[in-house]
Length: 114
Length: 379
Image (cartoon, rainbow over all chains, first blue to last red; front, top):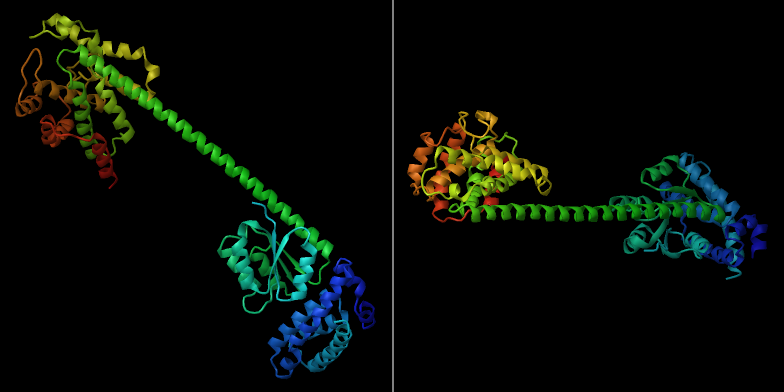
């Protein structure tokens, strides 16, 4: 599994270090990411103009993704948080959509090992 | 109690699992999904918590609410709190420190560094609480030492009292008729002196002084043990020579006290000495042995003089019958027994009804009299 998500851009060397080279724990936590992602309504919130909630959701996912070293997701969620904070919502939806799309790729890989 | 619990508060299960994994081998880990659960866990385990690791942004009760609660319950100084957050807002992190957080740690973190940072602080808190324990124990030891000293002090004071009583008893046996005299003097002294203190609240006599003076008054005639029986118990008027010998009881008493100063604490001793020596001085300077005049005579020696004269007059003695109280007062106020301080005579006048009741058998609680007197002054 780790090799496959590495191919999607995850920094698994850093991630393993973070999980003290306990790859089983790392994978267990990665599996929990799916449920976490399902709970996140960031895109809906952006589309309905509720930016405050969207920032909160993105912030949470940013933290989780960073801990798991899912670097591309971390960067996109961070971008969403930053833009909302700076009141720069132009093109925000596109970024969010891109984020969700990549997230789905990660989740598809991970769910194969459930 | 050993601090073996670490509390992890984070709404993300992944974060909780990761932190749990890092500290699992060092602590018993309790996890909470939000601030309220965290508060409950802290509340239940207060004395066993080595550290709290908390996220900031959580649904409902968040990290700041938890910090607020810890501040309100005085726990923030005894339990180290680390905020672990991906929030990078400067003001928010600054607020954490204002709330008493030990350190803020940014997500994502490196476990090795996190472990070291947190363990260092926990060690520091351990040392601090050990030091606090040492101080508390030393304080306890000091308090118990002070208590022992106080007990010894009370024992000594009691011993002094019994010595005073013993000496007073000796005088009773020796002085043929004035048996209860010395004890009545104590009561009269307290009554008159309290009246004086009430009308002169600034006279500087404390309640401790008052009690010492009361004890000392008992010994005013201690020198009489040195007077020959033939004079002390002579029925009838003394000759001039005999009276001169009788007068020496004041100085004889001082001589005796000079030989035993170490048994009285210094203040009691000085009152004893002064009263013994000067209870026959008179306001106009016509008393003995030193011929002191007016304010040269201490107020307590003057009080004992009046008490002594009153008691001698109303009591039957070998050389005279008892005078009626009314007659006695007339004699004292009329100057037949020598001049007294007019202010003290006023005080005596104010309490003469109480004194008469006392001589008719009314019990008087001197501690209560003293207590009421000082309560009066304070009000």
